[in-house]
Length: 94
Image (tube, rainbow, N blue to C red; front, side):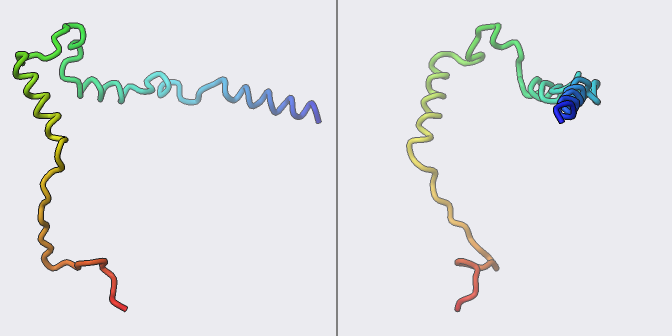
């Protein structure tokens, strides 16, 4: 019985040693890296040290202030006109 357990353990370990998809494993994550590079406008931006390119200090400060102020009050409520649809819970009255 002990020999059978040892044999099963050895076969399990041997099965994990070889990858059936070496080409896939070699390129694992390549699609994510490519997509991330495609979404990055300037991959070397951090090396330049130019944090707010194209903005002077006053314009950058005002842009940040407008952005932060946009969260101070909820967005305005819009009225939805329901034409031909059901209103209420949608179930039949009992």
